[in-house]
Structure formats: structure tokens, C-alpha cells
Image (cartoon, rainbow, N blue to C red):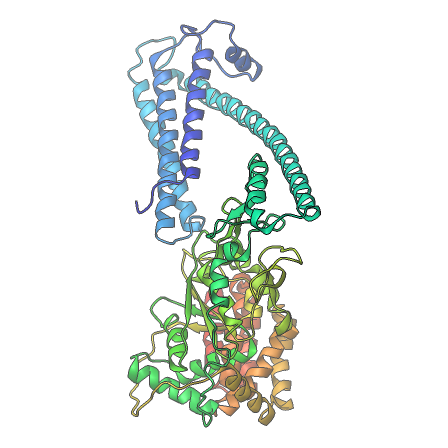
Length: 604
């Protein structure tokens, strides 16, 4: 194992052990021979209450079968815990269908083995009136009755302990609250004494020492000793920014150049950008991408702040954002998503009330630096983003994408109005700057979660289904300098020069109407705005705008059929394929038609 068992995993094994012990004692009490316990014990009474079949006599085969079940219950739990740990250590989803199948196989195998061994030992039971194969029904009735009764007692004890712990915690919280109130009152009194007294500055340390003695009586620390041995009182429980936000304050003091990356290649055009990028990747990095895919990636930077590169492993999903950043003289930031990510704090950290410090993560520092380097493209790569549920850990970011760019503020924690916070953390809110892009890579296998429509609708999705053949490109392609403002200016020029023409919009709407009427698939204004941004950029790159529509429909719209398709929709899907031929031509929208043909074959 790569890591030791966690506390939760040991706790699961301990609970299984407790259940086995409880059931064993229940069996001793219900045993008709009553060799260990009194005849009228509590367990025997419960067995009569629940009509558990009790044989006339105790015999060895009965106990052998029961012991086999108890032992294999414990073994099954341990194996399931270790199997789950195996999946987690290999960054695989422990709750996927594949994982659940493994758990079920372990459980059923344990049940089958224990039952088989128990039946074999019934063959050796020599008594004619009890036990043996002839009385197997009675034996199993007793064993399963004892297992059921043990489970009831186990659940009752667990509920009782849980209730006791809850009551203790309730009174403990009330006690801590009272202590905090007393501490606050003492602090207020000390402040009043300090304000109303004409204390000599040279005696300040003596006053602070008296205050420390009173405050230290509290269970919670409320002062911080700095390097010069002077005491600084916390503001409403939050440590000073130099302590609470050490790394963010260091960024404030680093004097980052706000106007960095201002030496743009002013003669660059969008057409040059996509052509030279393809040449640079092929000649310098030995990475081969289709020009249409690169154009769609670049155009997506105008349409959304979230781009998802999806497909099989080894197709260059992670390499594209890394080397695109290198080509424009920037650095990409990689955040490997973990299977345990469940909420925002997994990405951005949290305030630790014990250490009085904010747990500053590398991603938090990256986003904070972006507020200084507003003219640089900040490319954040969420690697393997669907290994955990995106809607959980990325929910706040998805909501912010709907806000105007200058209002995309993410609350880290609530800070008092008078708190001296880091420069760009006003009231505990972190601004997600317009120059920040989230590029997510997503694999398609059993270890990952399906990306939901909520995420797809907000993102630009590009599928990498095949490894690109080697390209023979000649020329000298070197990195360029491209700022965020220059890239936006290129996009704006493209939108001014080219449009998604009325006839083109009309044809596109025909497809959308068919999808809504025949296949019950509809798209909102958000997606319409995205395609309206991307088509003019494709035209400015001198790429066929139909290719843009092809990728857009196949990756964002037609994929909705994946989970709802059945044979009854085959005729509608066939009509859609013919409609696309009619509108865009038989040799166009190849990705869409390939996907539709896959659905049609599935329905045959």
C-alpha cells in the first residue's frame, strides 16, 4: 500500500469487529444448552420475542457454521476497505460502477465460501435427532436469526453512543461559547483601562504582560507574540495579515510588474497565431495538432473562461495548454485534481482557527498573483478534472462565470470591515481576474465521473479522440510575446470585421429547432452567445466556419444523446443526419455525422 489506512478505514474495521463480538455473545445467550449464560437471559428473551427458531439441543455443526459466517464477515470488510484504498492510491474513483462490482464480488464470495464450508461440516454431525444435513433448515434458521438479532443490538448501541456524544458536544459548545464571551468581556475591560489611563509608553510592555496573564486563562489563544516580543491583539478572532496570510502578504511586498509582458508582437494576426502555433508545436515540441483544433481552442478563449479538453489518454490534452503558454511567453499553472476533492476549500484552502493561519494553497497564490499581472494570460490547468465531481469542488467558480468580469469575487472567509487584509483580498473576497482561464483535462474511462450538462453548457469543449499523425512542416517558428490585452484586441477586431451572417444563423437555427422538436434537446442563450463569438474568429483565421459549428454541435449539443438515446430515436437521428447534409453539404460536419452514425448503429 502506498499510504497507511486512514482513521475512517480503521473505524470501519473496528465496527465490523464489534458487530462480530456482539453477535457471538448473542449466540451464547440464545444457545439452547445455556452452558455459558443463565437460561432466562436477555438474549434468549429477545430471540423468543422475534420468533427466532431455536433447536432442541446445541450441536457442533451449528456453531461451526456460525463461526464461519462471523469470520468471513470480518474478512470481507477488511478486503473491501483494502480494495477501496487500492483504487484511491491509483487515483481511481472508489465509488464507480467498476469499484462497486468489486465490492459485491468480495461480499458474495465470502458468503458463498462460508456457506459451503459450513454445509460441509454438517456432514460430520453424527447426531440423528439434531443437526446434520437432515436438519439444515433448522441450522440456517438459528444462524441467520442470531445474525439478525446481533445487527439490531449493534444498531441500538451505535445510536445510543451517537446520542450521548451529541449531547456532550452540545454542552461543550455552549461552554466554549461562554468562555469566549468571558474572554471578550475581559478584552473590552482591558481596552477601556488602556484608553482611560495615561500610561507611559515605556511601561507598555508591563501593561501587555498583565493583559497576557488574564487572557491566558482562557482556553483559546487571543494574542500573538511577534518577533520583537510585542503583543498584537487579534481582530475579532482573525490573526493579523502577516500571520494569517503570510504568503499573500509576501506577494503584496514583491512589487510584481503590473505592466509586464507589454512587448507584444504587434504585427501578429489571428491567422498568424494559429499557423505559427501549429508550426511551433510540430517543429520544436514534436506535438502534432490539427489546425482546426488549435483554431477552436484559441477561439474558445473569447467565448468562455473554462475550456475542457476531453478524450482518451495520450492524445495531447495536457500538452496543449502547457506549450501554448510557452509559445506566448507565459507559464501555465497545473493543479492535479484529487479524487477526494469535494468543496472549494480543497482548491483554495481554509482558515485554521487553531494555528490562526489561512492554509494558503498554490492555486490560491496563483489566482492572487493574477490580480497584479492583469496583462498576462493566467492559464490554470485542472488536470484530470473529472476524477472527482466537478459540480462539488468547482461549484463556486461555475457560478462566477455568469457574473460580469469585474464582479467575479470568490469569498474565502468573512473578514471584519476594519481588518487590515492583504491588498487584493478586500473583505475576504478574492477577485477572479478576467485574464485567468481554467483549462480542464478530462479522461473517458471507468475511473472518472461523467461531465454534466451544467458544466458543459458553461465551457468550451474540445474532444481528442485520436492521436494526430505526424505533420511535415518547414520553417523557423519561435515563441512570441502576446499579452492578454493584445489577444482581446485581436478578438474584438475579428468580431468587428466578420459576423455570424443572417443566412448562417438561419441554417443553424433550423438544426436547433429540429433537435428541440424531434430529440427534445434545447440549448440556452449562453451557448448561442458562444457560437456567435467563435464563428467570426474562425473566419478571421481563414478557417472554414462550418468546422467550428461541427465541433460545437458534436462536443456540446449532440453529446446529450449519449445518456438518453434508445432505438425509438433512430429514425429521428437519421433525419438529423440528412438535414445536416441538406444544409451544410455531404462532405461537411464530419464529426457530427460520425457521432450520429454511432448512435444509429447502437439502435439497430
